[in-house]
Image (tube, rainbow, N blue to C red):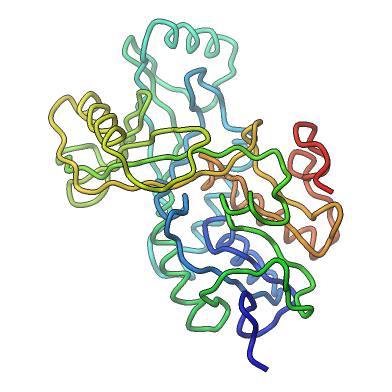
Length: 340
């Protein structure tokens, strides 16, 4: 019998819906654990993962907040992506440092107070009047990761290019995990307290930049190969389209020129919709009313850091019956309420 729309070509106990960053990392983790799975994904148009810069910055935001569990999650991310590099045969992980420039006196004061209390250790270094350095930081080449993985899984039959039909799931799939990103707002977890925003980035010509330094002052500038750089990102809460805009282009060009101290030449512009939550943490776990359904999503702006952690949570749950981390279990998160 031919598979119905939304089913994998070959049934498996686990079906991953979506091959963005969350679905790809989950797939690698399931492979490594020897668990049988399939993936359905119709493509990456409009997906946040498609245009993700993949930056892992331990200290970010106007109030200079350390990323949650960065001391635990950064080593896990480094190990995970380097392992995938060896399997995929393409470079993915790049060690960098961030030159964080103060935007104003308020930000300079926040830094001084937090540094004096030791809140930014061990990542903040070498402060001066203009800013400070953050290290270690990193960049994951998310587009390369998704593209190479997609080719391999299509050839092996693990991935089928279609969408999941939540109303007609194949009974052979004992568990279906929603990794569809922003589309999760319209699936079985639609009643969750999600937040989303449109983000745009710009690729520019920027020769002569230090290849291992991300510049950051409100916006970031990431040097790439061939004398180019990526600058981003805008943030439009509640906006749900993935069309590049002139306003964002002008904002990002101005930010780039301020960071490099000269004119910037735009080469390409990208837009996507990020899914997150009011408390900026991702979600993973089973649906409280239907344990056959799961979710691994809402990576927000820290997807490259969070994705290996969520994938690890799922594997430990499936292999050893471990409970999900209490920061992630959907029915335990106080800001969401019931999704039954």
